[in-house]
Length: 321
Image (cartoon, rainbow, N blue to C red; front, side, top):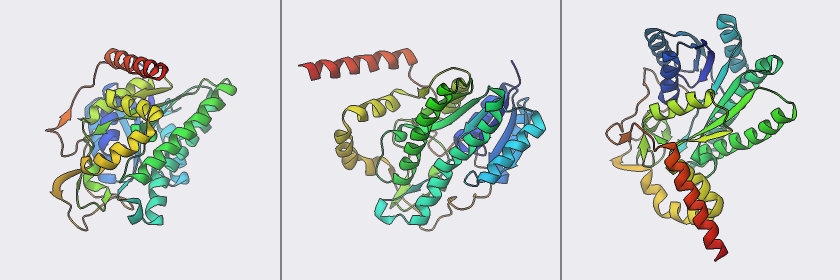
């Protein structure tokens, strides 16, 4: 297999860290982008142990110049970039009435503008060569907003809209640069212990929960297959399709269940450190604290398609009757 040059943002922990490991097993040459140096150095060691090559490009994706510098660093070290993974994110768990403008701006700058900065840096290099792949790490929340995560949901919605525009432009120009988005389910990552939270109890992913390796498998698969979008897991497809047909029901259901589903029974620690403005020290790895509840495999794709077809057929029949 060709030793692809891959840039991964948010590479130090969580989904990004799992993606790093998966590409390292393929002996890829990796440029690891994140703010936290401890996690980046640990990720680099893992890549080398798995037989890959890696360099570190410490950057805040909210800063366009730093992202551009990371892209230049990658190509100076390894040559033309083959695959760019936009994965970095930030969030705040809080009702909208408790968010500050500064917090909203920061989440948007990282989760949306960070994707834009990475995409533009990749396009500057890929378009003249007429090749390359850009993978956006999306979410079911790019289509369906939920309570207590308004800033994050809005930023992911923005990514989805940005992609729609870019898909059309690439087709219009006859470009061979590929763009895909991988919509993820709830995952067992460290973010629930480092995201700024104003909730009374500790935050958790909305079950069912999957291990980050499930996401990494899908992201790497999408990088090598020509798909406009990839939904990971039946629940992700249910949320996206269901919201297209019954958004009002989604509002009602989440009002009744969305608050409790995102919190454990453990009280939150007031004033605990978070990573909204600065990275937390240490190596946080790929997994969070939900290993005992997280699934390591996903529903078979054919089963998902079959169930989805049945659901759509049922809706169409019901509407006709």
